Length: 49
Image (tube, rainbow, N blue to C red; front, side, top):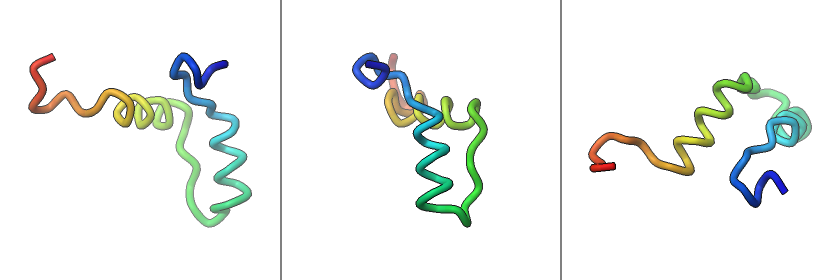
């Protein structure tokens, strides 16, 4: 349901990182949320709205 309204799932991300990429650092929730927003809405640079 969360993905349907565009809310990222931090717990799924952490689980994925720990099982698939144990050698890479895991982003904090704030970093993860900010990164997901940037991916979804794009960077504001060069946009009119």
